[in-house]
Amino acid sequence: MVDFIKYIHTDSLFIDIYGWIKENNLEEKFDKLTEEQKIKYVLQLSKEMEKELNDFTYNEVQVKDFASQEKEYKLNFKQEIIARSILIVAKAKYGYWLVNKEGIPKDEIAVTGLDIIRSETSKEIKNRLKDVMKMILKNKPENEITDKIIEYKKEIKYCDKCGQEIKEEKKEWVNLI
Image 1 (cartoon, rainbow, N blue to C red):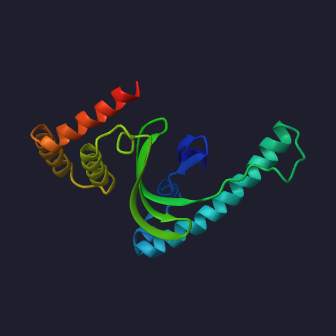
Image 2 (image 1 turned 30 degrees about the vertical axis):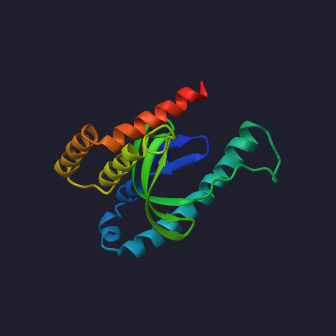
């Protein structure tokens, strides 16, 4: 399972379930499922992996490595989300296409640590960055993404509102100093 861990940071662990499916020659069968069936299968598979991982961390790490017999304070991993795709830019800077959160279907882009969500980023810029991120995560053709970036670059260059908003935000920061 370690080969399929794509990202670990603090309390987040992202596992490439599709990589595991391919490795176990289940790709053809999985690809024929509906989206709803795929999510149900991933949730079921995640439960099994969750149990295996929790048993391993307790028995092999907590008990063997640290000689702990404490049972009430075990480290427990819990499946929380299913992401269709993820873009990892750097440590603690990533975005993903969320399709399920704690068993509830979703269709949203979630972001951690990127300028898209930073408070000092202009709203006009944030909206455009979110749109480009969405295109990347939803696997739009590269030429569409490039065209959109060029379009946004032109819009921002000639956007009075963008410049004014950025100036006002800078002014607010200066007033704080």
